Length: 418
Ligand SMILES: [Zn+2]
Image 1 (cartoon, rainbow, N blue to C red):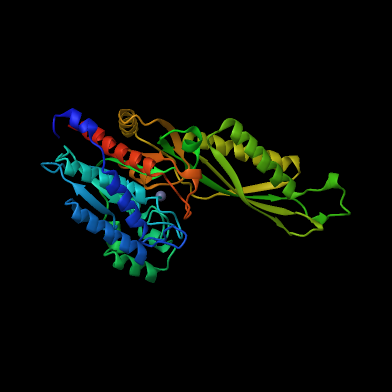
Image 2 (cartoon, rainbow, N blue to C red):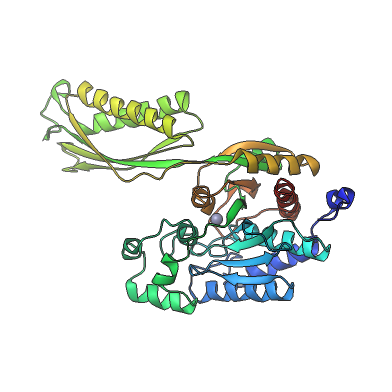
């Protein structure tokens, strides 16, 4: 890198180029109401991938695609370093999604690399701007990053959301296969950083520019069944009823209070509830509840789980019910790297962008990359928090802030290496 730190400090991304790219990309798979539909490895997603490949070539950056279909724009160090600093997100979308989710994260990383190249800066570490395959679960979700960190198995393809013929057809359209996906593991990642839209209103509500994610929440899901006794809803005296719904309802309200009081910003949800036999005139004998809770810390999650289970049993006892519960495999929370968060915060200070730390309540590729390398991510504001919706919006100014922050975060991470 040049020794003129003044020149580097003043370096800014090309705003028009970034915003033009964002609009151009939004035309690929555009829906009538202003959103995009680019489900992973469908024709629309393939078109977006081809668009990105051509943009990379036009920018004079190197291009690579790994066996998982993850695409990279590459700015080589001289000599090319053994390890690389990666940044990016995903170009695929949910059905009828918005134009910022994922796309902005790829484009800001790409724009940062173009800016460095235009300025004649050869970084001390090779940099990549990555588009991860199938983040949004059209196939299985977080697939490309899962492949890179070696967590993908043949069994995952059997659990895919598309049947095997469709899977093979989509993979071959992208020039990959199940075998190549399983061989896409990387061990050359020095650090990872991702920009994403917030998908919530915490930044907007507090009028802060940047949310530095300190953890991505873990998710635990438990099937719960309360059992009491069916009875005549008229003839059975209320004091003698063993109404399974009374236990479930009491639990849902107590869990709400307890989690708000003791585990904030952790959250819990009873997302489904169904009573059997299920009639106006029968006291519910059996009630099923789908219980989910999220938190950024595994020890806190363990405590939360113990508390909630204790509460299930207490509610059952109070109404003379029995209760059983069955946990599904958890999603483990991911703590972000202090080194990378620090690089983001120092760059934000340099750019005079306000920032605060926050949890991510949604899953992102970053949680996979965090298992093999120091990783962190940051949010830019989402207008009204609208997400996975054609009305999703991040202001041009916030897109530009996010891109300049990516540029200076990468420079800061490079500095730590030279
Ligand atoms: Zn996303």
